[in-house]
View 1: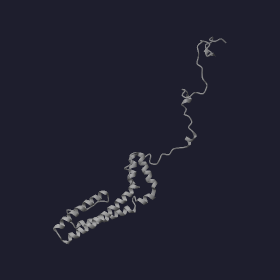
View 2: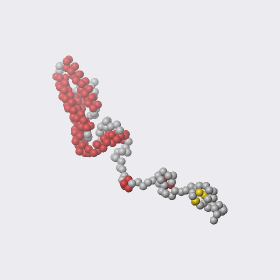
View 3: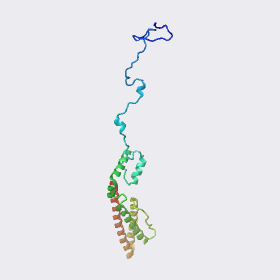
View 4: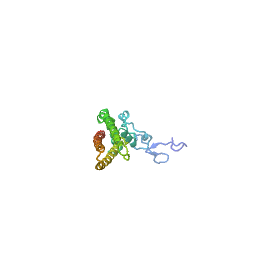
Length: 209
C-alpha cells in the first residue's frame, strides 16, 4: 500500500515522521502523568488519609458565640471578665467558671446564703436608719437604695450629713433627746461598717472565683 495515494491519509509512525509529508508528528507519552500535567487526572483530588476520614474535630463549647454573647453570659453568671481582651480569653474564662462547677460556687457564694444574708442585713439596716431619720427634721430625706457599692456611698454620705447635723445641734441644745439621737447614730454607723465589710468580703470571694 502506497503512502499518500488515498483520500484517507494513513499516518504511519516512522522515525517520528509522517511518511506522506516528511514532517515530524507528535508522539504520545503513555506513561503515568507527572504532577502538574494539564490532564483530567490532575483535577481529581487525592484520597485523604484514612485517619483524616474517620477523625472529626469538635469545636470547643461557646466557640460559636459572639464576643457580645460571651460577655453577657459571664455577666449573667457574675464572673469578672475585665482582664479579658480577646475572644479566646472570654471563652477560657467561661470554661473555667463552668469547670469549677457547683463546688466552687458553693464555696464562693455566687447567689449563696452568705450573699443573701448580707442583703438581708443591709435591708434590716436600711429599715433601722429610715426609722431613725423619721425622727429627725424633714429636710433629711429617707434612704431608698438597694445594696451595692453605690448604695454604700449614698448611705455613707447620708450618715455623715446626719452626724454633722447632730454635732452642730448638740452645741446649742443640750437636751437629752439629741444626745440620745447622736448615740443612736453612732450605733447605726458601726452597724453599717459591719454590713459593708461583709459585703466587700463576699464580693472579693466571688471575683476571685
